[in-house]
Amino acid sequence: MFPDKKKCLFMEAMKSRFEPAYYELKKRIQSGLIGTLQSIDTSICFLLPPEMKGKTYHFDPVQGGALLDSGIYCASLLLDYFHGTPDITIMDARMERSVNVYVNACCQFNDGTGSLEVGFDRTLERRAVFRGTDGEIILPDLHRPHNF
Image (cartoon, rainbow, N blue to C red; front, side):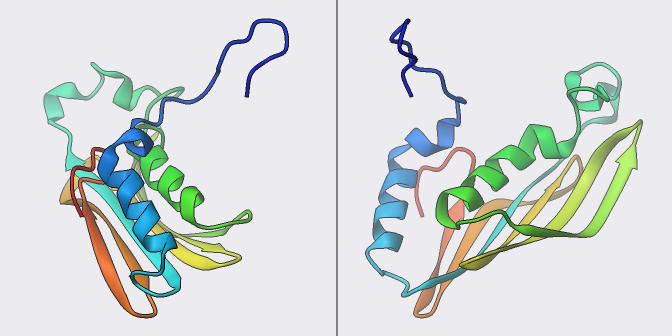
């Protein structure tokens, strides 16, 4: 959106949406490659070294936490494919130093289901799995996609 007076574009820098693989994947899913999209499972979990605790923004109660750091990439992807405001169910969560260090949530949208799993306290594959009526596609490293 361009404000009337300044003619300046203002937007969140969601870098993954500008990667060629992300764009091509969306085009293929919309063309029906896996049939009707039903669900997307997202995950970005990594083990934050203990020596970083208290020394980086990750554990700042105002701007830290796994949801703000990594969860935005998962949530952004879900919002890019599904519509409406989701009903969110927290399946599991863990707090440390007043920030969330792990969250596993289910997001029920009008037209599909998404899961979001983010954490600083464990290592899981960083990916998104798109499931449709006719197949599935895996997007490795969903916040920096290069292939699928």
